[in-house]
Amino acid sequence: MDPVKPARTHPGTPFTVTFDGREIQALPGQSIAAALWSSGVTAWRTTRGAGRLRGAFCGIGVCFDCLVTVDGRPNQRACLVPAVPGADVRTQSGTGHDD
Amino acid sequence: MTERRPVLAVIGAGPAGLAAALAAASRGVRVVLVDSAPSVGGQFYRQPVPGPGARRSQMLAHQRRTWDRLRAGLDVHLTAGRVTHLSDRHVWCVERESGRFVVHALLGPAQEESAAVRADAVLLATGGYEKVLPFPGWTLPGVVTAGGAQALSKGGLSLPGRVAVVAGSGPLLLPVATGLAAAGTRVVALIETAAPAAFARQARTWATTPVKLAEGAVHAARLLRRRTSVMSRHMVVEAHGEDRVESVTVTAVGADGRPAPGSERRIVCDLLAVGHGLLPHTDLAEGLGCRLDGASVRVDDEQRTDVPGVWAAGEATGIGGADLSLAEGHIAGRSAAARLTGTAPDPRGWARAARTRTRLRTFFAALESAYGEPPARWPEQVTDDTVVCRCEEVTAGAVREAVAELGAGDLRTVKLLTRAGMGWCQGRVCEPGVAGVAGCALAPARRLLARPVPLGVLAAPADPTPPQ
Image (spheres, rainbow over the protein chains, first blue to last red):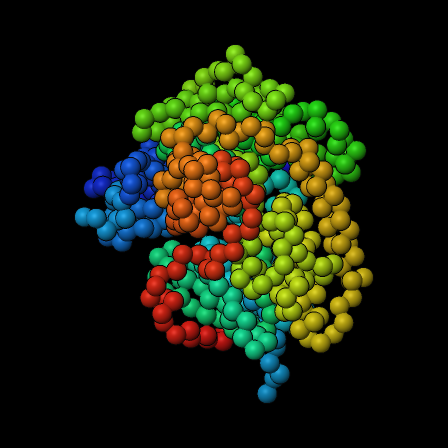
């Protein structure tokens, strides 16, 4: 037996979430960060000070760089929040309470 | 009427927490397993999200067997009601209250409400997180931590067609590179700051751990098959790009710890995974007043901290990987169970785990000295306009000004003057970088709360509910 042979994976049924109004595809179990990144989106926040783009960094909920607005609620960590069908994900500007 | 079983709160459901929970639950203790993730496993046993057609990095065979055994054992205890698993709980404080403990945790990813659990004893299995030293361009989207790249790729990230560079230092880089490659990414370079000579000097220690060596060899073989260029004694000095990383500049590290003149080369990539080793999560232990040894929670042979009723196991007590965490968790769980049920702990019962613990601690100490410290001159590469505190957007220039012109001589003063370390991450990400740029010692941060907590939660009265 090959000890490093990757186990087969069976994808679940894809569904859609929206990012800034645009539909993107996600899979059951994916975090919002993983779904966004898999769709080619690597940034979903602008910083409070310099307005620079940020996205995922630590991937495990420690750094808070991946903050995003989900269903109207700002400051959600995209790497922790699971993608669910129909989620309304929006780029967060500054504190998320600016607009 | 049945006698009340003593309650042990195990915080963290990675390898250490799971091993501890199983060991304690089998020995007359009721275990409440509190964890921040939706399912057990921690970072190491994080279960990959199945993706379309992706070949995913998988656990090695012996790791898979261990995971199956832990999972099956846990299921038996869950069904029997000896273990309660509280998922999506982000513990922000453990309070001592007349000889017992109250564990406060924020609920779910939203983290707007808090719940409390009472326990007779606490076992901290909080794991570790990654250290990343700053460099110009490290805040660009597309630059992630090495562990983050691994977590995202297990969490359903698929990156076919992407071009990645993996850089930094430490034993995590190799599995991250192979994991990314397995997920369909082209890993063009693995850039390790340490020198191969250092590894040769440790050959005797390496030889005592054949499993680890085999793992390393397997990883390397997988990598070489994918034609990744492996550069040791090199470092990434800058990431370039406008809205995201587009390339990196890599240099050789000279004998003086500075980039060797003329060795710069540019590598095109759209993902940079970077890490400089791991740091233990010690906030809850510090909050309880547990003594630290350097950056890690200090424990005795039974994995007890110096605070009565508080045990610690796994990477919180020192970085050493999953197998060491399992051994420590097992010992901690048995010790806690014995002491909570009023029997004398018998170390002969866990002699095998103790031997594993000794062997792996020795191995990881050697590994740490083989990888060594980052080049002493690395802060010189951090330009004044580089943001070092990502949350508060504090530049290296501001930190240097606080030191040179305002007389800051320690990390705390730098923080008060510049706000570096005052943001959401509570300084976890920037502390090593700020300390390096400021030329200060990296002292334990002594965070009052282990997570950012909404004010409403702090103002609300605690309502500890005993487990069902």
